[in-house]
Length: 319
Image 1 (cartoon, rainbow, N blue to C red):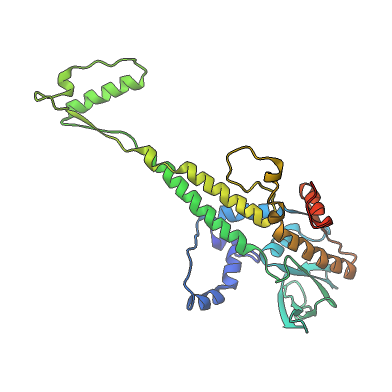
Image 2: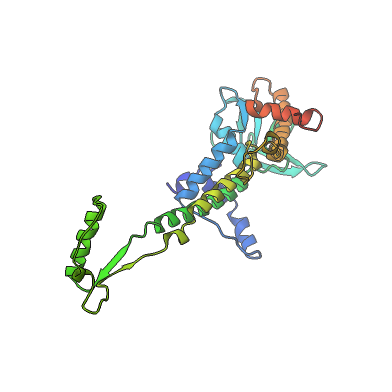
């Protein structure tokens, strides 16, 4: 699987091609940063995207395809609900045009080959169609997902390399093939579980008392950092979970945590998704009012609902 395999609206290659001109222009003036592209990167993007989609609980019309709605909302950032003669009320992604008095987009631009050409390509927002946004700036969170996917990919790549390097075996060397065969026989006996191995002094030392067999041994422990890399991977995941609203302790403390310490970052964990939730509720309420036959609802998952209600009841989390 590669980026080219994902060249559909809302996919990785689609987004990168859509913004390719802007990236080329910006790269002429601003230094480019390190970016990662690999099969592991694709895996991490899928994995983190599915985690981000799990924060809210949705109820959608039977005629609305769930994956199209969620992936376009989280990757592109917005979509439009409007009524058509051909398909009834539908949800579609599209573009934005013009500005109102507050410099917000005024028109929705929708182009789908199954819709009559030019019929719905420019609709007045809040009059002819309703917009549903994930955030007030009309942006999705693909940039956030890709950022942490890159960090995870680099950390996991380093982990694989380190684990591979710690497989370094012992290297024995001797002055001739006969001594090497003696060494092999001794090693086989040791690995077979024999409590003692006997050999002649002549096979190990020459007439001057020098050893005929030498061992090259790498200090594997000094280059083993897999445990630290695993801690880094967990820290990256915790930070990502904090950004998107998945509860986590978000701490490096090794001791047992008390309840207050474990819950200390509850508000930080939901700082972004509070804004997403409020924006979604506002837009969905407007959409449901304009198109009651196409009702959409969004709510917190059960484990997050109590925390949200406590944090918003009086501005302070209840204990």
